[in-house]
Length: 84
Image 1 (cartoon, rainbow, N blue to C red):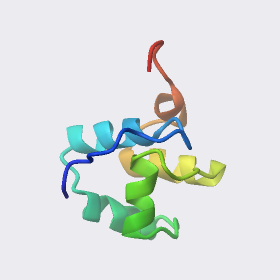
Image 2: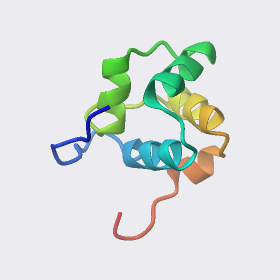
Image 3: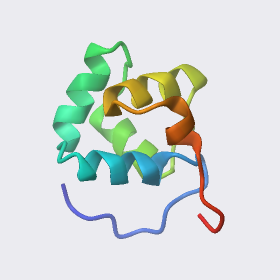
Image 4: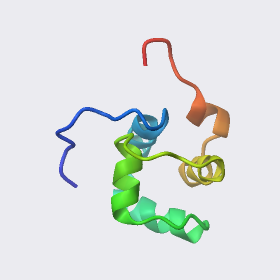
């Protein structure tokens, strides 16, 4: 996937964290997408890209699935450092 050129949006607070954790775990976006779909999250590649870029709202049930797919807690996914 090409690096994002635009600045992050403001539709969610977890998009950049999802990207950082996914990349730290060496999970490709297409593999992550497949895992999300397997866990019951109906999402397209475009929607995932928009979520990661913070251009898409995230539903509460999606936060749970995203955390499960990343093998982290919901609290860890939602935790924001001061200045983030």
